[in-house]
Length: 111
Image 1: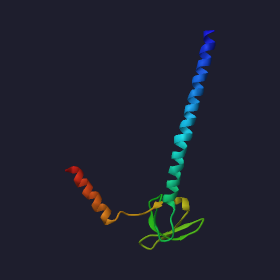
Image 2 (image 1 turned 135 degrees about the vertical axis):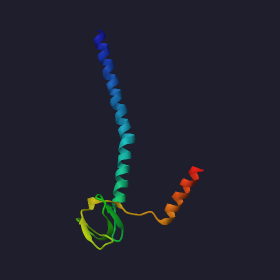
Image 3 (image 1 turned 45 degrees about the vertical axis):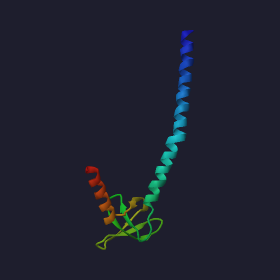
Image 4 (image 1 turned 90 degrees about the horizontal axis):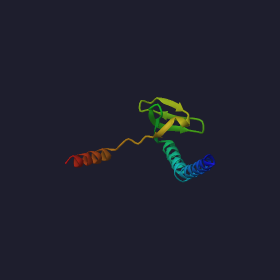
């Protein structure tokens, strides 16, 4: 008799855990992962004329783009073709003004 009560109690606790985990997944984890994926895809989107960085670290200017290949030209004039999934991000080096502002904020923190 005591064993039967324990079994029913553990089943209801298990159901509660499943419901809580399901709610956590659908209300927090799934929307968060969708938002991260969209941001990642947006940062990989490049157009002709943009500077881009590949997953291997090559930085160049996009000179041609189609569905199968993206052609990048380095500052030395070398042209390489990559599959679009090899583009890691649009490369926007920090400008001189950005570097000054960051340096000033670090000095302000030290005071």
